[in-house]
Image (cartoon, rainbow, N blue to C red; front, top):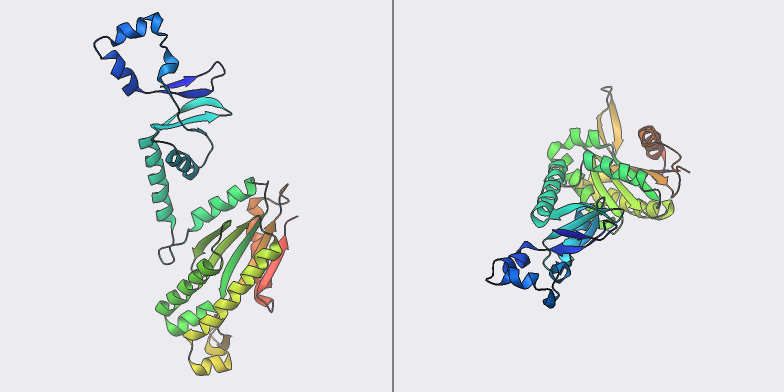
Length: 285
């Protein structure tokens, strides 16, 4: 039972087990009614962790875990009591969220998929207090590579890139995702476009260098393989590499809507593939 003050702000809880120990004892009720003992509600008050109603489930779980065997968590909205989340309910929420994340994971790379990426971008657009840099990756010449060497090698190339992402972009404030196929996503929280670009450039070069291992010596020497283009004609296709489109979203007011992001990225992807360093950047100021 949560106990509130006159402003409806929680000050603690009274546990049933504590009351039951007194009420069901032989002289418990008489002792409670004995004014000389000066026992009141506050004698049964126990501390209980408090969280805002809008706190993320993971943070609530962190608060819950740091408390000393709490029965649950009191939820408030603007410091005013709104309800109680029991331990069982909290674990159920976390479990359901983990199941949803697992269902959205890409089955090949185990990175968060489209739904998680879109949710992350929406939250970033709402969080105008900090700056964000979104990065969209697209493997270059992946289709002719896949046609030449088969889907198994194509999957290995995709896995290789995901492993390079985890290795080189694995730090606090960076979110990684797999849009699907040979398209990937990353976001940098509170990092400048220049800082993000430096790390992304290192990732592109690392992948380009290691992707050469998929080819024989002759293809590596020539720097291309022979294949058929989308129009059916024979063409020379450069070896696997990756292009990246970076969109910087500074802190403060948002100059564009989230719905405009798709067309911006499409233009940047084309510019990145035509660029010598396979990078294109735009700041949405």
